Structure formats: structure tokens, C-alpha cells
Image (cartoon, rainbow, N blue to C red; front, side):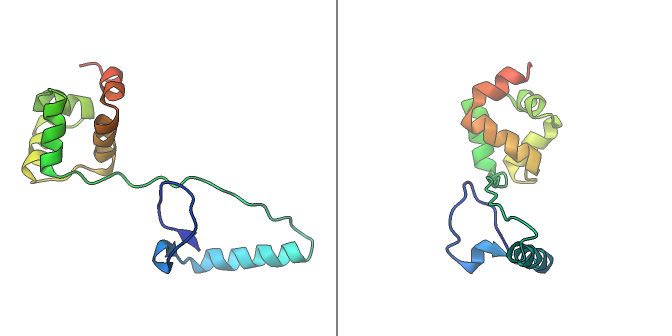
Length: 120
């Protein structure tokens, strides 16, 4: 069993938070048996699960572009997408891909970092 994506390790509060993987379950049980037979030492592994990029609405994208005082063309160059794509996002005709949504998230949270990294 493994947890669905979250920002930080926390206790599982609901079975809705769990993805059951039968193959992983069998492997875990085999490791547990090996541990009790003294063949293997179990260790605890903790890691941060990265959340998927957020979905942006057309109005959020437009607002973000205007806050940064960017033209559609300049925003497209920063995000490495065709000029028309930004317009399609803002009109709701298309949605940003995962990578583009992550860049929009960075632009929203730390615009100076993204703008400094991408000379335009």
C-alpha cells in the first residue's frame, strides 16, 4: 500500500488516501517474513511526495500575466510555448500541460526566480 500524493509525510486518515498495489503487498510480506527469520533487517524509509502541478483557470492565468506586466508573447517565451497557446489558455480553449502548469505555479509563487532564469 502506498499513499496518494501529499505535500509532507502524515498519517493515513482514510482508506481514500491509499492506493493498494497487490504486488507491492506481496513483496512487503516476503520482506517481513525474511526479517522474522533473521535474513533481513527492515529499515524505515521516509520521503516527501511531490504534489501534481495545480490546475489554473483561464482567469488565474490572465491575472498572473497582468500582475507580471507581461505580453502574451513574452509570457509564451518565458514558458517556452507558442504565442497562441497563452491566448488559448486565457480563453479556456486549452489547459496548460503538467510542465507548463508547474512553471505557472513557480511564476505565481516566486516570479523573480523564473524571470531571472529566462532572459527575454
